[in-house]
Image (spheres, rainbow, N blue to C red):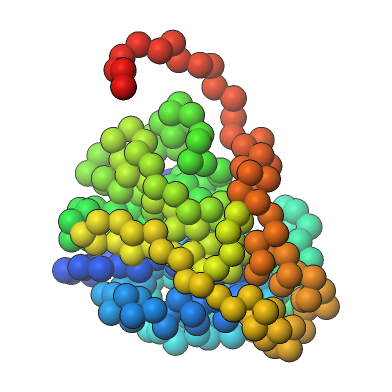
Length: 274
Ligand SMILES: [Mn+2]
């Protein structure tokens, strides 16, 4: 991943009062539609989609809905979008994922090129929060794992290249919502719109002037039925049942993802005390 270059990737959106963040949509169109219908999202000055947009059951329809929003949305590329473009161009994937391989074949050449050209991060000024960095996984890497309970030493490494004037970092990728403080910066993970772990529904966030983690309730039976009739992915029924109903618990997801966080020597405790 290219080194962080704020100057090169800072689209100017003046006076952003409210920013809605949708992450890890993964081609689940009904879930995205439900979030976009939320009054707070409709009223937001900007929607930022922090990557992993299309690798899922309805890649083309999701691409068309997102790009149809025009200047109301800022699209960022996640690792799954990068892999999708690689697959579409016949390059070998870094891991085997049946629905990603299928989704890659659905995109047109123009759509693949558009996904490849998406920026990996953006820095925006949001009222009440100041400068906010939006990325997919971490600011320096589109598939690095950083969790709510990752140790401070890991967060220090993850944030090492982030400019000092950025007080809030928004990242997705792990499909579980959280906010935490890390080395003086507020970290916001909105969770996943389309493939949530731990709790079903479409998870998103609203920024400005504070930070709200939001969840849109879904009619899971209706979403599964609609995916089954709308997607040509061969194993769609099984896929939808697992992801729409959030069969994976947050404990299971944390156990798996924690293995991808490096080990750090423990710091001896000093101050402060509670
Ligand atoms: Mn991802």
